[in-house]
Amino acid sequence: MTEMPKLTKKDFSSDQEVKWCPGCGDYAILSATQMAMSKIGIPPHKVCVVSGIGCSSRFPYYMNSYGMHSIHGRAPAVATGVKAQNPDLSVWIITGDGDSLSIGGNHLAHILRRNLDVNILLFNNEIYGLTKGQYSPTSKIGTKTKSSPYGSIDRRFTPAKFAFGAGATFFARTIDTDPKHMMEVMQLAHNHKGTSLIEVYQNCNIFNDGVHDEYTHRNTRDEFSIRLEAGKPMIFGKELDKGLIREGFNFKVVDLAGHEDQLIVHDPKDENLSQLLTNLNGSNGPIPIGVLRDIDSDIYEVDMHKQIADQVAKKGKGKFQDILFSGNTWEVN
Image (cartoon, rainbow, N blue to C red; front, side, top):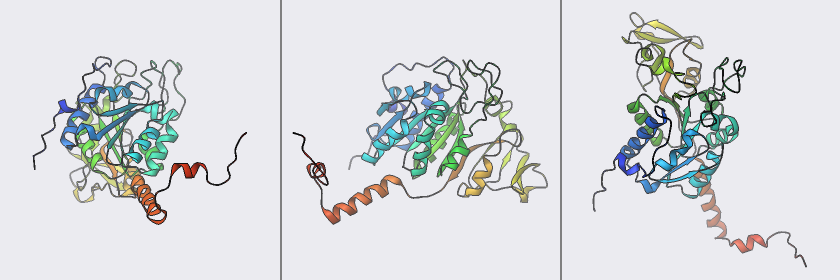
């Protein structure tokens, strides 16, 4: 047997010129994705990237793989067809907070509910970038934009809460300024059997610059975010001197000294814990970065193909012509 050649980032980079605004966080996410793909080790011809509409949705053009630039909010529906027909493909959905949580909210909910074995990268910059700066479903109350000149009065979506409400089996959060962490999370998402949703805090330096600075800037991120690792206590802070303990159904930030035996140990298999982690919003405790939930459940396309195989075994392969002329039919003269 011949040894498979080692894949590199270049194997997943297309010959198309990458066109985003200079300084956009999308560049870092693209690079991290190409690197993660090379480490995952699946060859490009076994990968399919499906996108909707938005700045992030140019992604398929820049990936040397199969790809489809679909329509606004409908990438999950297209990807469902791709994965159902080609279960051996590694399918990745690229979307943004406007594309997936506004016009595409129903499609996102149902692919999470069904639990196909696909991976979703949700770029969250809390703004509509491609259409030049309107507020999005994740924009904070008070956000002033071209479509909310006096400040948005909409209550915002939290992608993690939305995902868990739809029954997501895998949810992670990462940031565009940390390529190493992005790659690690993408590899964990790929290893998960079922739908994985990764929220990426992404900066739009043109229409919403610095929206995630507290959690991404090196001067503040250690105090306002916490890196989750399975089996490890929840510790954060620039000096790693703070921790999280449980206080009823809430979290409490404490000094590490004297509370070591009370610290919460992260378990992404604990559905209740992952649900509580979605309540941390930066003002009541550090924003969780990493895998919040990773649980096992039935996989849609596996069950679907098993159901088909069972019926073929019982009835044999049917003919399309027989379907057309079965049941009540009539001729038009």
